[in-house]
Length: 522
Image (cartoon, rainbow, N blue to C red; front, side, top):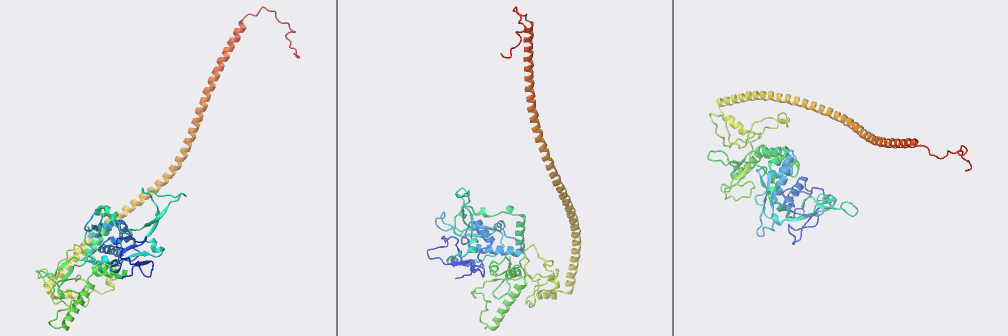
């Protein structure tokens, strides 16, 4: 059994073999989850999972073992390709490049749920294995051994009721419980949504994500086409004599076999350049030729280690590269393509269907010419040797005309670029002026706020004074009413006094003077 499931030298996880009553879809101890052995052994998965891998499992509502092994391979290959090209893999970008396909188990389809597979919208990756056999029987479950591994699977969060509201304890604090970063066992919740709901359309991607997806497609389109060879290493050609080729894609199986970043970079470089594969093809062919010389004339030639039936005349696929790249110590080929007397050019291969040609990285690799010598491959030398002097002169003339055209176009584009740069600088100055105006507007706004605050205080005081004036006016009106009443009462009393004074005196005798004196003793 393959036991390497985590990155050395960590010992945070334990591999456990389930008993015979447990199946891959069984529920295991909380924090543990089942995994197929092929994911660790052949696809390079290691624990803890990367953030992107966890995000994919979480987005799909699936435990890793619910995904078909080829789909697990696509996840890692996509992440490694993004790392090589220098951009961040995201869920929208991944599920724009891949859509879902669900298997349909036989019988009781409503209650049975099979594996989920990822299918490419535009093919960029080779499938990991055309036929994955026996993976269902080789599985185990893994469980965390310490807090580090536990926290990579489980996290604490607020407990919620059926409505999604957080639960609060008697002391007023939130109740916490354990949650998993991704499903730890097989679930049916994934199948409650149609497969199309998980896919992102181009309109839902950001500009950066669309640009990164185009980068991946351009990168794969730059791969040289694959050439077919027969069992003896000779190229398979069509009726016109051109080699049979097919489009090349990212070799998923070879990529996942890389154990470190250096191997990954070397793998991608060999996919996108020719020198290494030409050397491999040459070495394999020399090995076959040497074996043929040492064997009897009746013996069948060996296949260079390929386990195939010699009786079958089945063509094998060998990745060859563009012959225009340097290939040192290559023997002159036995067959040279014929030279067209009019065009004075040789293809020697089927024209590439790619509409883009990748230039050598002259800016990114300053030592491309300074630190390495420029040479011509033997195949190109053989072609040039077969070209006559007149045809070679015509080729040179065409090249000179092309160089002058390139200089003319470069000058034209440079002038237009300078115009764009001037417009850019003017736009930058305008932006700086707008920023300055914005800062001044902010200062004016702050001053206005201060004035507004002062004015608001004055308005409040004015309202208070107006209220006080209204109160005093009311009191004045009330006092004026009272004065008027008192004046009326005074006038009434004065009238009564006059009335009394106008009456005649009574006939009684007037009191004597001594009677008018008041006795102080009473």
